[in-house]
Length: 392
Image (cartoon, rainbow, N blue to C red; front, side):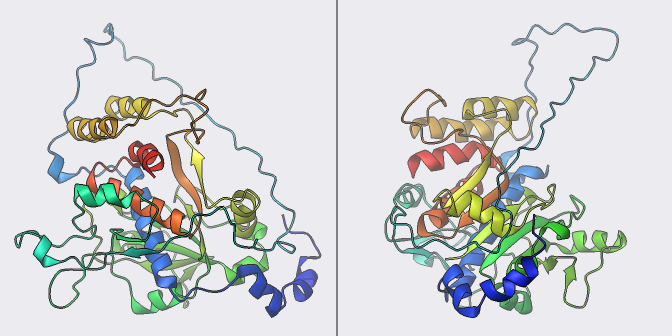
């Protein structure tokens, strides 16, 4: 909540010199921060669209009658009630007025992270076509888990022609220029007309955040047309409310779920922003001394449970899930045990609809590693979160 004296206080408390202290040095590599955010958007969008991957073959329906003693009755069985969850109370500060970005945290691991922008043709078969995620080898995958100076795959790998050719996720130059000015970002996406637009609750967001935080909604042409039909037409600045609408051309994945130092907040399109972004960052990152915050899954915490649930609901091809899961077990993934004192997380299964990040080297590395797992294996991103955390 913003108190009544906020406007008056901002005149004195947000002088240019103090603002510089609060937000620190603005990186000259803002575009790389955006590329990481966009890669995360692809990753998160995996989990909420039901488009079938063409290269894993047809989905096979398992016969559960042998495993469960199913008795058939003449009438239609009653569907179980969906479990309902109430929102939790978050002790945010009352105002953004006195928030200061903390000094660099000495516990954060420091290293240099570069990104593969173009692949060496000598390493690839000439018949292999260029792709957005590149062609990361298993050895590259293994090496990338080390928090050391390195260059890794993280999407946005250009074509291997003499001229850098696009492999997808093309943006207008004006939108790139706008995004390059952002220091704190709230982002979401709607692809394939999969959802309706939920505007941030303007009355709970301070005037300072409205002026200094970028609210970016990525859409494709199909979704933009649907929004317009529903009466949500961008204004002359390209905005619908607080959302800056950025149109993505040439979406690189058939499966829309793959289509996910600054700060960013990822908000799934099924959620509405009901708090000031600065208060969110202060609570989850600065107050906690953290680089990365993600919500727990409501009911499942073990990857074994998540695998069974994905198969039970036929969320993805069962053979593809088994292939990924068996590799993770061979990599050393174990069942989640909350009583294990060596477990560093309250869950191995996240609810990826809400993510808050500081774009540090370690946070960026984690996002790239997670994206690469989703790009290589299934689009069920909750299966790969635990192994990335454990391997890293």
